[in-house]
Length: 608
Image (cartoon, rainbow, N blue to C red; front, side):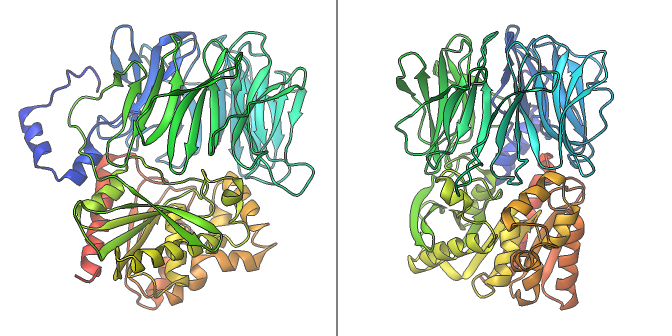
């Protein structure tokens, strides 16, 4: 993408035409929604895979020039543009291990420099940059210290603003730099944060905590300070009515202004640049849309977007909105409410895929939403892939995904299940998996499996359970607890041995596991045992394929090796692929290799 004229050499064009569609979807250049500098809106930062590796790019809208900022073997996606547009900050870890330091580079190009001298490497816990060009609020997480948040000013040693053993993170820095909002879980519930607002000297201005009182566990999130000097209003997300909604909290007076919107799903928001209105994102039943909420008249106006998923949106100073949109059938594009495509990467275009069908299945905890894709014109029963999302606090949506599309191209139906634990269906649905972790989700997956077979969609003799991260964990757990239900399993970067994973993983995930399971492995050993795939490894009947990143801090390699050794000890059919990266890969060739290995494993082990 760097200084490209948008054309490829004839030989490359022919090679691209000869590729199968599934591979084209991975190789086609794509871009993220561009961030723009608050005080220099012509300067933007985005992520692209144009070189075959996901890296950061600077874009000067005034001149049209685009410049590749980072160039690392395993890619870079974590970057922030300073409000004055002068600097690009990016997180420098080692081969995907997520442990590193912030560096920065001038927007116009030049040498990288250490952004916060005096701060040792850590896992990142948020970053907010000041408009003065010299102030940063830096969140850090380490096994030894827990979470620390620092005030870093150019030419001065960093000062500690906050320290606690439990998880916390930087929320936002006010427009004039006088207030710092943080999210924290000092109460020990990593799924539901409380808020604290600090001054730059570390003293507390205000607190908001919905976790206190009553039996309900409610969370809060920082959505951003008003973009006006001296304005002490903070936009906050809350769960007081059983779903995510915004409110405005004036941290100097304590006044809370509820923003009741007649929308059935989760609602998030961010400020328009002049502070007069909010850009509202509404997510409901695996799809999303945008609205403008006027803070003076309290009117909600829909912003037209196609049916599908808006993965990100930002209001511009001229009142227009740019958004990243896709559907299961149509690849992602960065669009504007002007009707124009904002950022169109050069080179090969991604082929589309088939649309999803919505299915609702009665389950033990309520109606379960599943998304189904199948080859055009195909009739069942079909070999069927149950592709299980990660998180667990995430959800599959009507959005473009190259992985499921590859299975469809090869003749498989694909079923994606928004099991209990998924977001987008209310707080009770998300929080339901506690203590019986993994087993709750698999009950929902089993109910949808039963529907798929009895409806005639799925061939019960050709069922694949697969997923990555938490989806990989559920795959291994499902193969052991439901051994007769699945023909084979494909698990990417999974939790395989929960106790060992707990002791080896990054500190923030330890806190999440304590919340999910109610304590440490020493405090609640029975729960860890019941929820660990290695407990049931000897019951596994299906061939198993596992891929793992050797530098993964989320699903570390040692606990996967423990599981594999148990498979080996009884000569259970399995294959393992280890690659030199972290929790997934940002290198297109590596991702294609992994998908090709998964497709090959299925073709060799699934009955024909």
